[in-house]
Image (tube, rainbow, N blue to C red):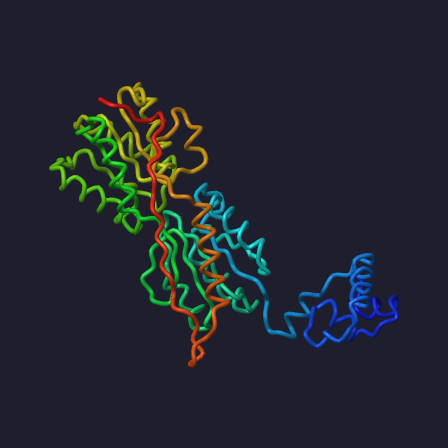
Length: 346
């Protein structure tokens, strides 16, 4: 890489003049525009690029934001990452992708590394596995903004972007109720997952409002720590082995719904003719599954966009008289029901 000194030798201008021009320094306002243009053209021609590492040492800033995901192979995470990447691309910040692989040990190791690298913010994506937000305390103590996507946050110092899970579950069961289903089975999410609690609350609220009986024989819970197609397959087979009859199934999310449909098909039941299935999330594959999944859509790309907006607001807003930044913001996205081929009237 060509250095400023080499560029100075080639151009005939001093390293100081070149630095002022290429860094758009206010101190270089007296330099003639013709000179600035000549320096920029020569820098481009010779392939000069600023040494960001050296800049970071001088300014004590990394201009990097950590993007932490629990499992990069999870379709939910992938779509949110798309929104994060598009938004960060328009900023001066470089994303540093961290895949913690649902491991607390990996999480702790990466936290220490990120602090050493002077990370300027953390955007953490939470999937169906419980995100231990208390493990992010160390960033708060260093006044590093933290934004959690996909999970409502309780700590006062964390901003969050999440879908209204209770509303999403209500509109899903309301759809099944309106097309005549009364014997509805449920595959609940893992016990420790906040989303599972919120969605079940939405289901119960609707059922109480219309006096719909929820049969305990038609309710199973995912036993794995996180949702997956295999977990949905096992849960559906458990429902099929029980005595209760049902005409529809509400799955915790789309991945669970994929497994549930596979189990129903293997058992000789046609979806939706003999059993309707509803998912949650609207991952990309939901529209192309066989049959396409009726699901609650939360624009995951929008979640990513809002996460970046929250981070940029936290870093760019002025500090108060005590040197404290802006208060955390809690964004809640309104879900929409997408009706496709996996549900039908009875």
